[in-house]
Image: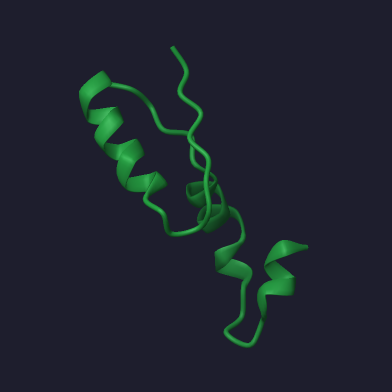
Length: 54
């Protein structure tokens, strides 16, 4: 079974996903993990949101 969890920033998607994972022994595929791994190391403190959205 696949659960697709979507919503606005800061409404608890990650918290809900982690609870669901614990009860179903599932796996989370989250854009947060990939963004942090692939892009954040290259981001400078002075870079704004436009850099990230590009």
